[in-house]
Image (cartoon, rainbow, N blue to C red; front, side, top):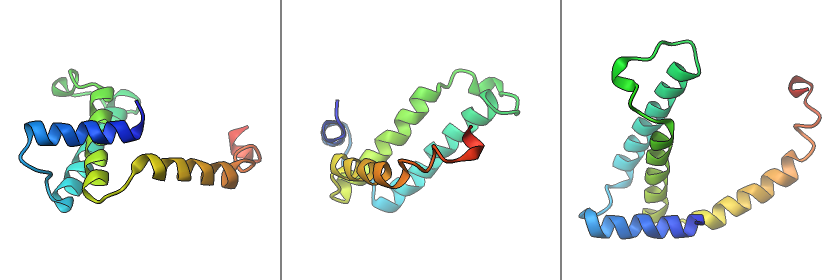
Length: 108
């Protein structure tokens, strides 16, 4: 599946199961909340914090999917073709960062 298809799937889901998109500010707050849930799992499973019993049934994949869903909502409601934007970003990073990381002594 490409990003454009994912955007369409989200739009179809909103039309079938929701009333409408939440407004952009609400979705931005929701995105922040979902990113926080990803951070919580990372901090507790891969970091030094201990995991709470209530968090043990949560999966990183599901939380990342929540982040992706809200990002796709924001792209849809603001008229952004995220596939196109992503392709441009990869091209930019390939040109800008091609030698950057190879020359970084911290990564050797």
